[in-house]
Amino acid sequence: MEGDQAKGFWRIGEEAYKLGKEDPRRVAHAFKVGLALGALGLLHYHGVFFQASGVDGLLSITTVLSLFEYTVGATLAKGLNRLFATCLGVALGFGMHHSAALTEKYSVVIALSVTFIVTIATYCRFFPKVKDMFDECFSAFMASFTVIMVSWNPDDTTLKGECLRVIAIWVAGIVAILICIFVFPTWAGEDLHVGTADNIDRLARYLEAFGDVYFQESHDDDIEALKDYKSVLEYKGKENSLVNYAQWEPRHKKFRCCHPWDQYLVIGSATRECAYKIKDLNSYLVADVQTPMELRMKIRDLCTSISSECGLALKEVAGELRTMKSSVYSEIHIADAKAAAETLKDVMDTEFWPHGEFRDASPAVMVATHLIEIVACTTKILDSVEVLSTQAKFEKPDPALTAVVDL
Picture 1 (cartoon, rainbow, N blue to C red):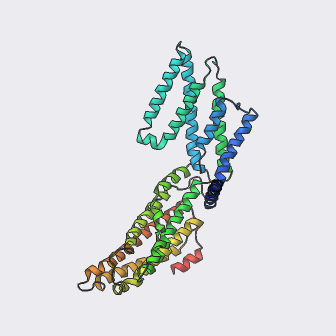
Picture 2 (picture 1 turned 180 degrees about the vertical axis):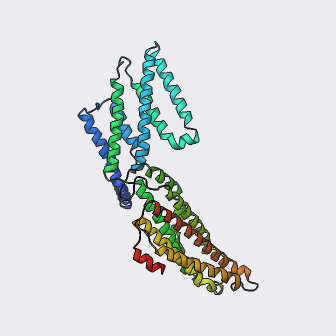
Picture 3 (picture 1 turned 90 degrees about the vertical axis):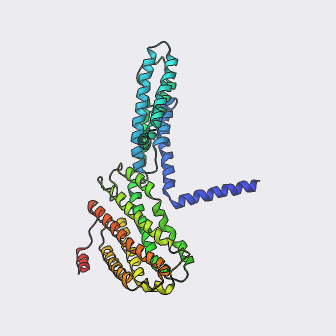
């Protein structure tokens, strides 16, 4: 029995180590939350602003735990909204208590007030737009309002208690926000920028490898290595949230205050469009019916050229994003891909179709068609990144290199 427990603890330790190794920022985030609560503990202990006991301490602790998010942008976006909602709940609670004090049925008025306000607030959360944008704000509002209502001392008719509670909330929120920004910060904008470049790079790796894999007699062992593109199709939800959070963040690293974050949605849309084309293309690698190799060989060079040049163009674009420095080589590669695509169209119209073998040739024709469409998608990605580079003022390439390329 003890041996099983030891193995269980060992597995937990291995899992914890794996999580930290995959992303060391997780360790930093855990430390920051602990540091924020530790800082509040010192303020409580020394009686700065508020006392450690009672509702003041409870509100400050729950405020930190509710608004401390993984990225700076998420903390600012959710934190400022929650602080406002919490203060609104405290203020409303104060008003309701003083109104109840004017009546003889104090406890009844308090119970009815909590029931009525919480019922209305909970029902409002069913509205789709409210749920998407302010769901957590309503939760913070109801929690702070209810805590104030049930912890009130009817004999206390001063504002001291309420002021201390508001101070406790704001101090806790400011401590959390400052620690999130200045202690091992995790920027939503940087995650969005790097994630966009990684997605483009995944498409580039697939396209660079596709031509060689498709024109082999057997490629079962290589298909598994080409599945990395699928993660691009699942990135939309994360991308939208990162864009929203990035807009709250102050200037950091190479990202200015007015960085065009919305342009990443355009790049992401073009990237996913290309990923869907690749998904269709990939289906012909695993199809039961394949075009005979002798027919495929007629278009091998052109298809391989298109796939490779599009991959190289996307690889250059991913590098542009990572370094925030414009490159001229992506234009060269996409121009070569377009030229190969035009030649492939001519071949498909004149030379490829064998008499009476339409069914055999059909899969290869569809592969060629999808590759031609991918050229257009790649061009769209390049154009959207070019817009970003202009708006974000990426570093321009060496003029001498540009002149040589133009020649």
